Length: 384
Length: 255
Ligand SMILES: Nc1ncnc2c1ncn2[C@@H]1O[C@H](COP(=O)(O)OP(=O)(O)O)[C@@H](O)[C@H]1O
Ligand SMILES: [Mg+2]
Image (tube, rainbow over the protein chains, first blue to last red):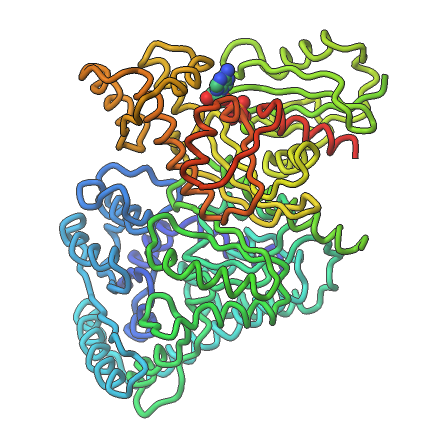
């Protein structure tokens, strides 16, 4: 397949989520919604069901969600609530929910009212997740989730099917990591919008197909020469870079994303599922490896170190902290991240966004000014 | 005569400046952005009516401001943030913190000794802390914008306006008027209220001396006094604060 065909197939998946879900149902498959932030998709795949990402909607206008949330609640949770009320998830058999932030915690309760037909499957992550007893706890928790999924799908999840699902997801993760690296080596080879679609599509297509397309795409990208690039190598932090108009604006002003720690993107795949005694234990051990995660207990505040290390690795020129409005988790972390980034001599822009935002003039002005700031500094450095 | 033009199409007013190759101001024009005939066209017409330059002698035009993408006559569009930094650095080179209070937005910009931007912050989509807040309050009190500072200078005490939201603050002002508070004291309260909001944003980027106020907000001495109280440092205002963005655009065109 051509590079453009691969990307087009992925973009199609991102743009036709409801159609895909409908098709799966027609094939007699069960569909399980995977809400933010970390849910064991491997269990869903092992149960023979189709996992579909539930990450809200861009530019959704909110009305019903205000019955459950005050206006100062995160727009991702609000748009999920709004869509759940509108019947967007009617074809979904069950939804896996976490309570990894305060607003998600609220949604774990409100969704039962906003979408009474949607069966919830809760996953409660351990607080002190680095301790060995957390693994013991998580094994119990995941076994309960496994049983609930078996009930919904009517299929048994075996050691073998789970092992295969883990291998498949790890294969996809490896391909995504390779992809990210290629884009850092060859900035400008894809647009920021394309990068986002490629990464996001894993949440909305058969994982096997995604892994296969990723591997093919990587091969194509590897063959291509390094494009001439005189733009800005950008590292992005935050929850997500949606609405995608933001990515188009980045493209317009010459930014190329060379690395990210977005919840919806890299933080979904940067840790492999490790080895373990049983397959469920392997899943339980995955979160144990996570370092500096804002949505897990991070007493040493290592997130800024992780960001600084990655910025160095990908040779970022600048950092964008895309702050989802009202995300207090990110608001708490921002000063640490800012200080760490500035200590490396890199500029950082705190850009407040909302998934539901419909006007982009303010963001455009900030991003244009940021590009001008960076470029004029670079020009001044060259002449001096 | 060869000249360069900067046009700053703001949400409230459209400002034009013409400079010569050396960056000396030849002419300037300010027109309200409002509906009706196009403000950009009117501003340019007004500009050419006020100096000897001819349109065909224009060697470069840069557009900035909210409407920068809509102006057909520009060679290039540059953000207001860069333009304000450029314009102000030319007039007051010792300034490191620029506060731009426009009709609908509010910006704080930190620049270095070369005039290069180090950091900036902008308000969210809310009229608190902007010129629009002042306009709304003037309407309620039935006084002119240009009279506000005069009233403020006669205030005996600051009548606290507790709401930051423009809509709620408007009804608060109406009720203060009904309760018989002096307009002078209410005006002082209004300036105090927007100064509070502005200083919050400025403290986010960190205050570095010297500090200057630009944009139409700079036309309000009362606001300057209130800001000095909240920020705790002396604030400089260029002679024509509202045209600084357009001046910066013109200087960039001449560069
Ligand atoms: N004569 C005046 N006295 C006091 N304030 C004024 C005067 N004229 C304009 N302003 C203020 O300037 C604001 C417009 O400033 P400006 O910088 O031109 O805004 P923008 O760039 O957003 O169009 C108005 O909202 C008003 O508050
Ligand atoms: Mg302005």
